[in-house]
Image 1 (cartoon, rainbow, N blue to C red):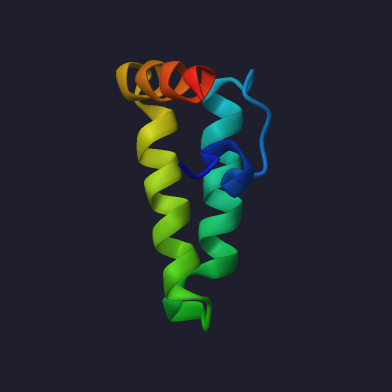
Image 2 (image 1 turned 180 degrees about the vertical axis):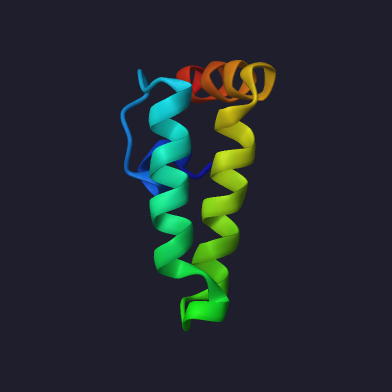
Length: 67
């Protein structure tokens, strides 16, 4: 399982605002329309979608702690 926190370069204790700010910064930098890497952009989007949703984040954290 990939570490979504590492993809966004944030701490697991990050607030929703910090998650959003990290996502926006990385999305601007790696967006395919700005000559960025489409694969990395998809990873960034997936990480944000998971970590910005309280229920999905809780489930992800539970799975990571079980490993």
